[in-house]
Image 1 (spheres, one colour):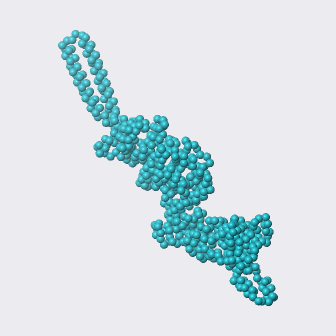
Image 2 (cartoon, one colour; image 1 turned 30 degrees about the horizontal axis):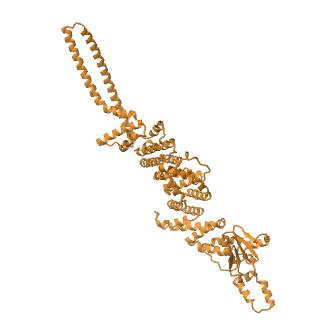
Image 3 (cartoon, one colour; image 1 turned 30 degrees about the vertical axis):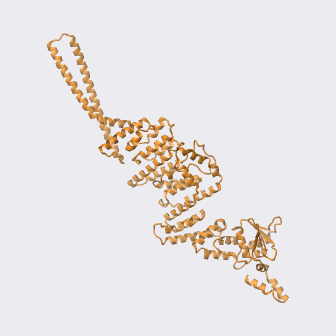
Length: 625
């Protein structure tokens, strides 16, 4: 360009006409335009080249029309030269040429026009990707002019941008609006590979434990679009980054991108009382119309959620259970793929012991549902999902070999399930069948104390006062009164909502516990089922033996009474006849003998009853239970 400008200046002096004519054959018009086009002026939605020569072509990009000269473009843009040769000007519009879907838009096209006119332009990380794609669109190759825009933007990107972390992140963000040009030109792939390599190189020099210094790149990665983030994490996994680091990065990305609607839904549905149930149901039913108006945003959120699920490392410790449950809630709310939801449920079942009851409060609706049930039928929490997760957990527990670990884990799970049952019991629309099935899902040995289960059942009976006596007995059968604490027994004994039979069992259990508490004995149920069964079998044998002795004593008493009545009758018959001294003395002796025998029988009976009374009480408690 400098050579052409100098030629034009040299020919402005006094020269022969012949040399001037030869020079006119060598000079091209763009060089003259370069010298006289100082810039562009914007008037409303039009741009004009500030030149002494009138513009001869108008180009429309987006909603902006550029009035320029065709020769600077033809000299450096192969696309424009082909359009000029093969397509006539459009006389029916306000413009001659319209560039559809031009990468970078009107702002990028303006910078390219300045380059074509020889005006200075600034290459920086914010515009280099757009200029590279725009120059590729206009075919600004080296075949038209040496040092054209393709080569200059490519060199700047390769040697300047990729060597800097911040510049690479900036370019990658700018590529979000340049699809598919940025992908086809490998700009996105090269940026993602450069970022992954910088992360991998940094982690080679750090310790094994994830520190705050290792998380310096989490926030920058969280600002990227999900498909770019997916490429970076995939590259990191190929390079062998620790699963814990990848999991922490995924959790940080999810915290940044999950919508604020999650917090609002959690505040409405997690803890609600009877006075807030109507408000909660209203938020589910009446809020659907507003949610249906943002389906486009929901689709974007669903894409993010499905991508994060597919990115989860297979290692169990890589991602926390709390994040997995939060991801599951969002997946259900935004109607993610059923296959991914099922995979996520299995993943949660592996680490369920680390969850809390509030984490398990999963909504039962999706924001893009076209039809919903009435408020009387709609439950607030999705119990079926929790039931499946619990089934997966029990299946995994059966495969564990360490018995001690199994006991501690089952104890934590029993507390978790009881707390969850207490939360969902406040839902007036939950069926007794689902509630009972979930309560009975755990094995009998899982709960060492049934106070939490009793609290959940009591809450359910309080919220559902219309239950029949049969349903209340059916629900209370899940609870073992022998595993209630003394405080629990005292509360249950005065609970009018419990069936009478359960109250009787509670009273018997309370008496045993109080007697043991007075005697200072420990009545905590043993975790060993075999010892418990042996103790119960020995107790039953004692009860049966005492019962047999009692029956024998009763039979002996009946026989003695029968003998006494017969003797009494004989005595009365004899009294009707004249008595002799011998007969009177004889009957006197018989009477004394009978009274003596009766006294002996009464003493024996009283002693047997005193010996049987405690055992009889235990027998009644066992038979009632």
